[in-house]
Image (cartoon, rainbow, N blue to C red; front, side, top):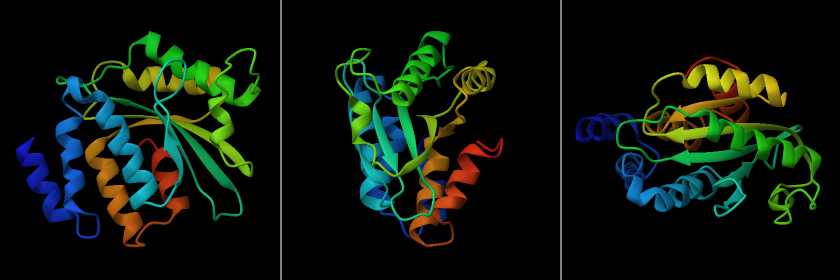
Length: 189
């Protein structure tokens, strides 16, 4: 991890290096809650997405959304801190599928927490995103299956790539549309 953080230090020039702590958190399951909170903080405070950390029972870890595009988009986020990488078991893919469907249907009888009301009202499209230190196993097939079954595009991104994307967004090398393309309209992860 130290090697990865050192590599990132040389590549990140606009984002505070304090966020490199996310690399350590992404591999420490005892710090999963802090990983959730700091990841959403990165996206809302530094990258200026709207959104918030949710977490807890029957809610995704967080949501973020754009606020200044002609067609704003929202992202349902699930963070996973695992020492040996994250394989995206079917049970957790199914949990994300439930969140995607709850957001589309928006029925408080299905989920009384109504977590989806935290999205801005002008969101025209939604995505899902898993964030972890790295991914292992059959996760790409799970993402594909989940995207097909929920009719919602999604992806998995390693925290190191998310940090690089954040730096490019802050520097204005990327805009919010570029982030959407990188995360949801290519196979790059």
